[in-house]
Length: 287
Image 1 (cartoon, helix red, strand yellow):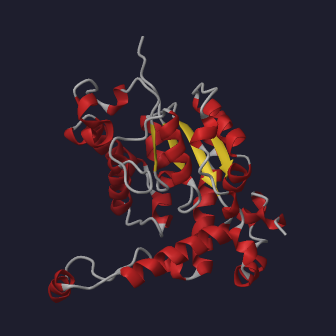
Image 2: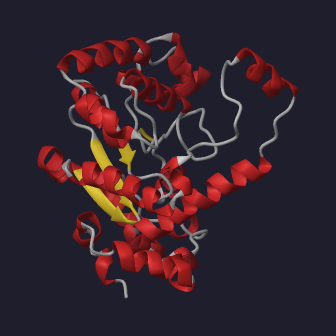
């Protein structure tokens, strides 16, 4: 009988705590990828998701087009993914030591998964490849998310430098020069609209996944990290009676509803608290 393990797929809006949860899960024994970026995202699955987004003319900050993929697109994407799951590139996920043992990532027989906010939309393809996958959806209040995106964008622009390499690109009109990740999220209300897109998509998955999807509220996790993480591990099927407190000890509870200490952000909250997605998650009653 096959001992193949189905993955744990982490979804949720950018800057919502997905990196925090993924990092803790990796420490707890759920393999989240050999090669990861600074946000605890598997490079292997990140590149696949980015490629799929490009094929639909979608981007992380404008995922709308991906809502319109049809079965023809899904069949193409599945074929591409299946090829890479057993191709040479799989070493980015499983590492050199496991490369020869597992001829395909689908053969993995230990707890594993990956995190990428884009999973929120590409899950429509992943679910056809991993039919029994479990989903962890991490969500956070929209004001703190949008403000975090806006600050990140500002830092990038301030730190960005246009040097000789960039000047050559300008001359050739090739590639990317201007230091930004998203012009959209400079506007905090557009950041909130983006939050709505991700949140509505994630919540719509309840009908398909039922008990195989767990919604994790970031603020609750910060308030009760041990209890919350124990629930996630139980959902993932990982028995861990000890060591949880050591894993979650770095949790910073003061990041919970940070916007409450900012008058400008409180004004933003008053303007958006009656949005349907905000009300559905109970964020309309924070104050």
